[in-house]
Amino acid sequence: MKFDWNNPYPTIRMPVMGRNVVSTSHPYAAQAGLKILQQGGNAIDAAIAAAAALMIVEPVSNGLGSDCFAIVWDGKELHGLNASGVAPQAWSPEYYAKKYGMTASGVANRPMRGWDTVTVPGAIAGWEALHQRFGSLSLGDILHPAIEVAEKGYALQPILQHKWAAAANELKDFPGYAQAFLPNGRAPLVGERFCFPAAARTLKMLVKNGFRDFYEGEIAKVITDYSQVGGGAMTIGDLKNYQCDWVKTIYQKIKGSDGKNYQIHEIPPSGQGIGALIALGILENFDLSSFPIDSVESQHIQIEAMKLAFADVYQYVADPRSMVVTPEQMLNSNYLAERAKLIDPSKATHFECGMPGSGGTVYLSVADEQGRMVSFIQSNYMGFGSGVVVPDWGISLQNRGYGFSMDPKSTNVVAGGKRPFHTIIPAFLMREEAGGVVPQMSFGVMGGDMQPQGHLQTILRMLKYGQQPQAACDAPRWKVNKDFTLDVESNLDSKTVEGLKNKGHILKKIDDPYMDFGSGQFIWRLSDDLQDGYVAASDSRRDGLAAAY
Image 1: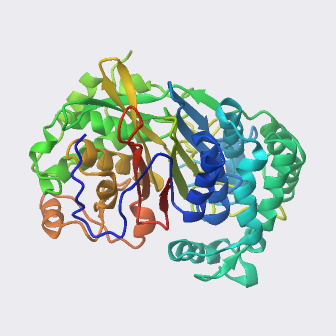
Image 2: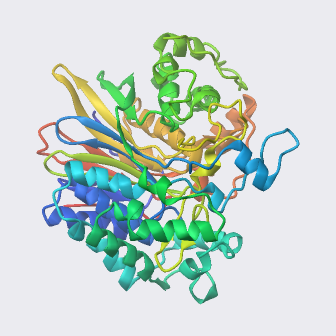
Image 3: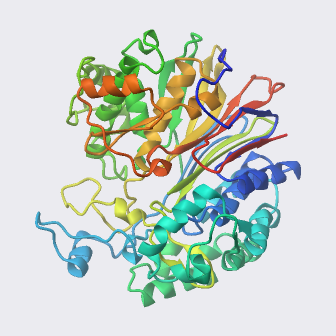
């Protein structure tokens, strides 16, 4: 790919190049991963180290009670990992109806925070699976940077502090939250030091006893005892029986402006990554590059494709054991070609789902000089997740259970041992060559339902328009909401914004651009023989850093 190395957008970031690269949403985490690479660890070791550090330095978005997903290129083949949690066995619509009553429409009420939103945390099991299969350094070495920063502390950066303070009033009375995250009775200030010795204690216990301690040892007992005290349903059996899954990735082919065929890979459902693939497949039926990159015509068609994708995602995506259609059916090229015909170039449309034929998040990317690449994402969901933190252990728990439906007719209806609809999605780009496929880029964009939209927009900028990764990352974004209204960043060209309005798109006012438009990390391989290393980008919408040597 012959990139245009100019960047037409206002930015403080430049692309970073090196033979070993770590790109994350916080400088400490990027440096933690780089330190592991310098000590002789591989990209997988570095990814775990960076993920552990992010739990300490960006606790708004993730913690020891998170879920995670990963796509790994081990130098020879691609591997997918689903380490998202499952519902406690006690959960059912009846469980929620008994505790919270019924809505006017006849389904059970559900909380947004608290113990009854906490599915079994999968992140630590995900680290274990990655380390067992690919790791080369000891747990002590890999977790040392995170333990060190937890004990010594760090000064809060501006964007992180803004989100921390915004969550404080809502969560201050949740079990364990104030003790962990409101030192001096308030959120820390910009530049103020925050220490997290409780989380360091848990990490040290994992080094001593291994990752399984979280699921069947002393840590597991602490979690479940606290659940019982707080009225939660989580049991020691729920933790002990949990296993993450190695999965085969799903992908969509698209042709780049260089004439090459590329494959965009995602983790299969219950995640929403398939939404990006559906939209990309629809867009292959248009000559997108015939329109200027930031024109209303180009953006309109992309937005409509994303709306079509979401219509199907929200209807069909759930735990794959419950889905009534398969990912293969949803990605069928003939089906997507028919869906593409529904797009009217002249106006916005509110789409319904089709019928396929039978047949608070952190993201990081790491690449090493041996060619291994990791696309890794980890999240507690909404800011600080459930709001529940296990006292003295620093285990802040996600609220992924809020992703379930309470409607018994839904494929995503809550049930014990089932995974909810998930928003966090790592991605990976492969390039087709005569001898097969070769790795091209490890990438991801965090931020709720912005994630597949971020994948779509950035990948099209690189592959269809030749924008270099940092420019594609810095470019203004739009976001389709669940009601099909549209959010646009303030720096999107005013003529394009007016053009979208004229086509019938309903624009909303943006109060929180930090979350609304996500944040990405990208590592692009510059040559197949690795002699030129990589070029990396880190999104200026967060406090992040791409670090290399």
